[in-house]
Image (cartoon, rainbow, N blue to C red; front, side):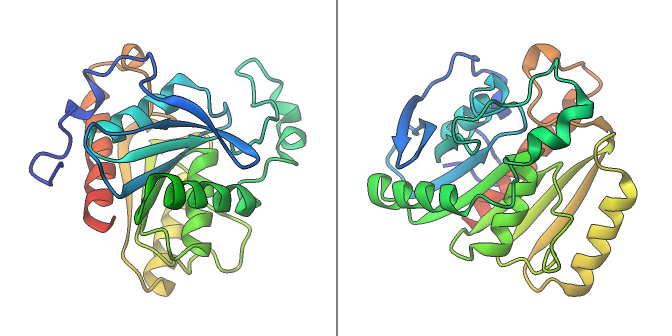
Length: 245
């Protein structure tokens, strides 16, 4: 098992190939990608995809990385079979596309995944990691599910709920400094309100010079200047899970 001095035996994903090390399974009404570590464990992480859906290689790669660090990792289809957003999509139609895929209306799916992890995998300590859309979902789960021991929300904020600062489990928020989706004033406001109102452990961390999507960027798309920040963010993610899960 990794520790804080050696946070990831897989070298933060540098040596894992993008082939997918797990398998697809059915969890009640949804499908999920599941990958397990080589040694038995009762620790699990729900990996929540971005707008491009559960089959995106980038997100499955992060699940593989977490499994290499000793976690059962599951990446469910939170869109429940609906079409994910396409990179070629017309952004003027994005809000219409999002209407039936709100990251704050996922309780039925979360319950199915938790049941699977507890009953089929013997998981007793469960965390969440989410990216973009999944970062919002991770924030939401931290407000709703105290049984989830830790969350890492990567470039995602719940904006519309009155209780959005009342976290029930320790949560790390990772943001990019140069993010066209989440302006820094929103990040700074979140940090200030959490400091004022939140009673559990939390951290907001901004990575300089980085853009939206940097943490789960594919290896071949990483330039040398960004690599140290990407590795640091992944290390922070793993250390947070290792500490609280």
